[in-house]
Length: 433
Image: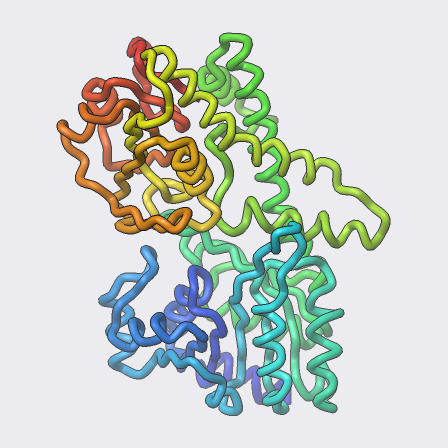
């Protein structure tokens, strides 16, 4: 059985199913289809599937042209059900793994897919979990449930974990150029998974187990969240000490070894940074271990949106204006620059808080035409000299690349800049984080 699947992978005859067609699943599906695999996509969102069938992408990194071409050639076929599952040789699960309101893992999306898979599992299939999760998920959640089929892992079916490393908007490191880590339940599971990804990715690293692969993904994101929180805390201190944290970072960057720059901001966003580390924090408690660095990092980063609000209030006070009824124009609401992804964006919390304080909010973001916050639907307004002059405060939350920030600042009455986008430090009406 492994030999048959191995040959199918090498000859691009293996039929692949991608469960979850979001920021991870859709690029993966199209990359595989471009490489010559027949790919089926499964997503429970009917609107998404309808758009894809029309050749329309809802993800910035996926151009309509390439999508439409693969749809027309029937190389990629999206659907909302699992009827095609019996024909699949390889299944990649790319579903969200959010936290609930208590910051505990919400595995409902994963479990729902697993329920469908275990009813249809057949001999010769390779199941790969890509969703970021806690160490032990593949072995303790997936394996026992799939084993109820009576099939034996490593002989009848194959199971592995291969963490996604998609970075939305990153033009330098595409899926092919970003190394892939894989860990199989058995040696054969790992080798088949490695071979599969080698068809589309330049470097594939096989580790000893799914637990190692699961922990690898968490380490990557914990490293980032801890260092971001450190620089955010130092930014708060530097503000009190009248020291420009941005100048400090630029000076520290000149050291050619032993230092990696991280930057402060209004908070952390996206799926990985504000969510993934807490999967390990939750899991660690089962071992009577407390991940103090992770928890502290979370506390500091959660403070940043509130600090931004304080800065806005302070800056408006300098103009003898209360925050109530002040017109605040928000520039950028995506969680990072040059993309339209608002998942966990700190802008959402900041805008919601400003609305509660009765500020009059408008926003401009070329990547996010519509935004829903606190039961209000906001639309991105046109950025013009009039809108800038009319605003009591220009609040820069996302530093998209297509602006001359110094010009925008000169045309504004007051600026609160959370991204150091305005480089001219001689503008006295610009307040930087």
